[in-house]
Length: 55
Image 1: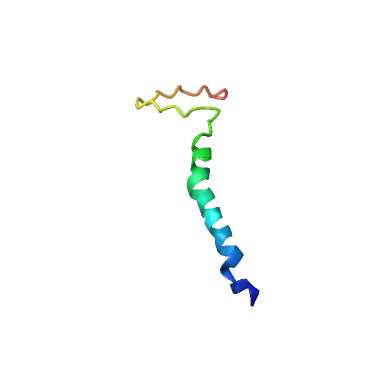
Image 2: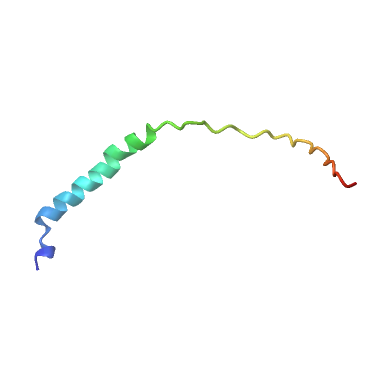
């Protein structure tokens, strides 16, 4: 059964994990967002009353 031969697959496995653990985090963390999140105000805004046209 050739699929049990670890000769080529173990090296591919190691290189894949090396990529995901060493190279990929730096690329993901260097991504810049287009709009930075802003903090919400702690004060609640007073809602404006609705003007109902039929009232």
